[in-house]
Length: 263
Image 1 (cartoon, rainbow, N blue to C red):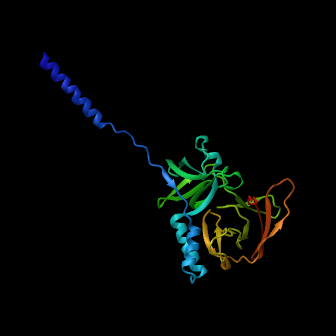
Image 2: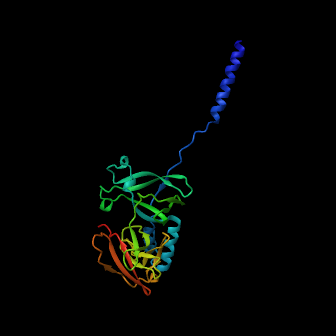
Image 3: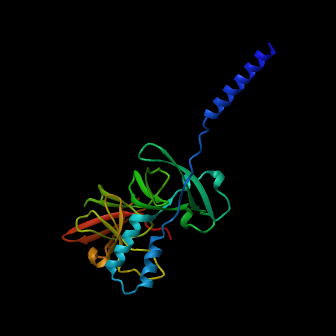
């Protein structure tokens, strides 16, 4: 009887051990760390090191960098930062969950400027996200040399420029701005917006940033963009806090509406 009992116990222990070995504990997916691409700094550094490069060569270099690393879009993500991460530090490392185009959730982590420490302008929680394409609905960003297409959360805010009809009431097209700025021009067909680069240690004034209707950014030679008209300010209708400008390109006139940069 004791021998039978001992054999039964051994069998139960063996089955239990085998069952435990088959159980797989799911591992948490590693967060994708989003870091700025600093493409503009690299363009300026290339000009400093190789001053003989033409504007066209420098633009080509910049576009190769954008395709590989993305262009930094400065999102205001204040409404996406949990209260527990709002420390007194100048920068916050904030986690997030983004919805991929495949339907899967992607865990990310990015750096946000504390608006109370003077690191960000006008109370905004700035987060630099390198992107190849940005629309109202999607962001195609780059991290660890990989591209991720995600649904853009409503809490990831950018300034916009709107193309208006002659009545200044109907919006014909909208461009997402990577940073706060004043429009520098519109293409002759009205599909592209041009903006100046912000101040660099090395001048790249002969280049401009081109924003296409599909949400992609590219570096262009200023002379090739045909920016002969610097634009004219238009008085804003009563009751609006937006700014308006009129541009002439080709044989057409374009009116744009935008939020004036915070200073």
